[in-house]
Image 1 (cartoon, rainbow, N blue to C red):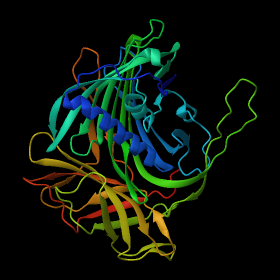
Image 2: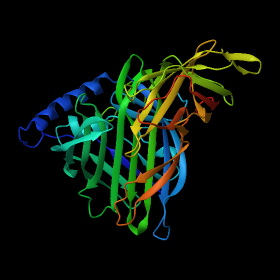
Image 3: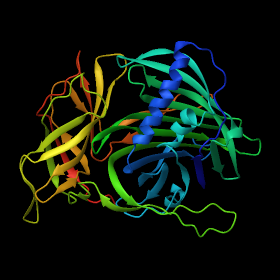
Image 4: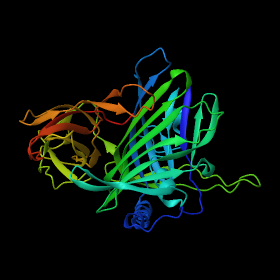
Length: 424
């Protein structure tokens, strides 16, 4: 069975009349800020890792791990294209062609932002101010009518457009979008769908010279009749800029819109090749992580010991490793933080190489504990106890707990990795 969740560009005629409260006047600034963010996005590609879980019927009590899917996603001219990791040619606008069954979704990169903020079709209401990890955060509610065809859902037994409503959170100081949570409404009576909920987390990602606002994580929960449930958790890593070659075909039949051909990657940014597979690599952090750092901040490390393959030196002792701070959040209400370091590229002997590896171990230091698996709550809407699933660590990402009255990850912290080579 294939289940497809698809966001479509919503077209509307304007926001509903709102009061002129300061928080509502701020909405236009948020829209302008996000419009500018989308305009500054370069052509780029990210690795999407999807952990999929499924409960096939009411007889099963829990969601069980189905599989893990990895795709390369290219964002080009406000469109998303999908391919196998490492490919240079992207031919599919729909990722369903890469799976044999289960749930898959699209639209995480720009379409959700467009629908809520830039289509002038959503009804937005102010819901209050919150404190999140010491940041002042504004919460707004939104509603998108099914009449706008903003979302299309295809399940076994039917396909149709639905409405969407939920909430989004923005940083009061920077107006950066932090999180969007939504659920479908106005479900057509012929569509066999009980519930569909989504959650997207955004953060700063360094691409080339710019730190751009991109989705870091996306979750989707779906419930169908007869007890079938599905849950996907997608993580977006290893993002980088690309030059692309794309074209428009004007040979479409009369009365039809010319087709846009898929992009072909013609020249990658530095670091287009990979460290060879099955090499053991030790990386030492060269600068500390402190409370002044934010998600998306650049981090650096260095290779400890030469990296050699078949007698040939790949990277020298002390070679620079570049990456970013992927995650930085307080865990619960105590003095514990979750920190995620994503290493992206190493200055190898001949040229920069992409760093794609599995974390094997890290230094045993007081107050620092590795997190190789994580329990994730599932946003179920059915009347039962809360549900969690367990997801594994991401390639190239070291996630760990830091305990103490103040966040501090010292320089010199070492992590040990086994490389995967090319993404396939």
